[in-house]
Length: 165
Image 1 (cartoon, rainbow, N blue to C red):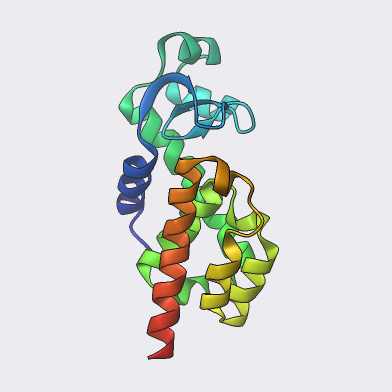
Image 2: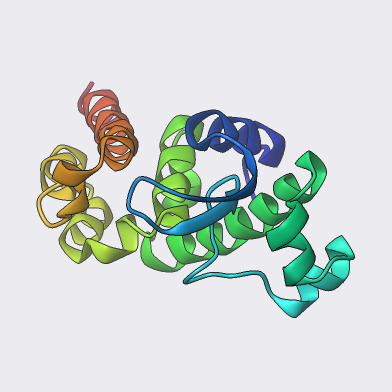
């Protein structure tokens, strides 16, 4: 990864929050730690072995802060791969844009917007910013998702202005 993982962990933890016991997120999805979706993503056997707990233990007693951060690091690694697979010149982007794009992939948003990805790959960052929120119903339904998506839009617009200078 070309950016500092610890900085990204801090940013995601700040925006997501850290809840060490299972809870329902703003969309009613069972979640733990720093936005770990327990319904779709779950916790793998490898992750459970690394943590040294069973899923039942985690559901009953929760995670430590260190365990939540380790799960987040794995999620970030996966999101990073997703973004790099979809965006051609990712490594050439400024740090702030990389972080927002990976954060969006972490939440499953950018990869569900093929038109946005196409515009990014064509270098039309202002167009990508306009397109990004068009096809995500949760944008209008969830304040948390809207805030996250707005940060991506802001980063895309900022980069569009820098490229045009």
